[in-house]
Image (cartoon, rainbow, N blue to C red; front, side, top):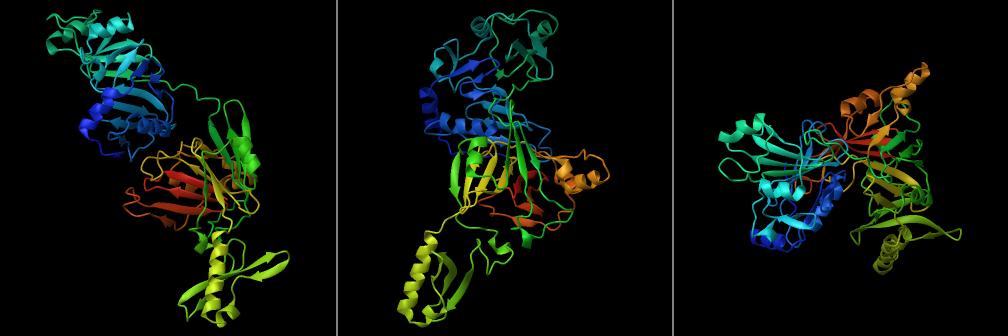
Length: 475
């Protein structure tokens, strides 16, 4: 699967490469702003700012059948850049450069590749050896048919003509110059942590990174929650936010101050404009957002007038009622305008979006307490992929229906639900999910297809067609 960020024009791209600043090669650390260990959403954000004003195509390659077994790749073919991400943590583990004639590369303040190096664009083995210094003899990879020159956290690969391969397969000679007097040209560059590009090591995460979010479900039972009862607040779930050096907690009902203290300032604040699930509330005709609201149709005006009962200084003020409709069109229009004005300035629930944690918090506009928590898995193939960092949540097995049964017989449940669990495993622990609700925005807005919503007491699982968990909503 490939995703295009923009439609590049070759001439504009050449101008961008010629004027952009060089990317500094940092063995074992990164390349320019690409840091080994950074998350995939951060890498995409940096890619969007790196090539200005013309952005090249960016392909996102992943395995839809085995999303956790094969690496996620961000490939920029026009640049010759490929970023390899660990499929589970979605952190950058290998940086690969396959085109040395586009983006400028530097090491020790010397530009050795790219359009700024037009006098000597070829990256010769001898030039690399002089620039990066002595190292141990490399090895010839028979599968790739390339000679690998290794440094700590970095390696170059060079093609060797077939007639000379035997010389470098068995000996310790460096191919500084081939028997014909030529020096091999660099084919690829890899930057990683460790000594072997085939077994890269991920660095430890930053101290401010949440390494795991432990979810303690509330008053769950073994029955599937009916869609008509989605607004029930009988269950109270708790999050245990495990940082590297500390632990924090957040729960349904926590205040804004609690969220700011535990998670810091949000990346964005979004005010909820409408409630798509309102039609599935307990009583969608008479109880919306805690207010008594009715729709009264006026046949003369051929429109609907919304009425609600509001309390101001212990007095009931009718915005519009049936008697106003009988008083003539002028009075009815005035009442309609007053009702619409009141709705325009009505308070709205609001989200705190924590993109770097993969968490959304929905706050009640009246009490300013958390009423919903959304945890994002950020799987490729989901329309919100790359917006959030993957939230590594884990539902404590002892708080699931199966865990409660095990606890009754004095046993502990050894089955937890994680962000990497498949739907079959979720059902075996939570019980049958029943018939799901379909969430689809259409082929234009969402070319990846619909997702399925399964509701339980206090939580909703959003499941992709592959069976992966796209998000977990707690309420």
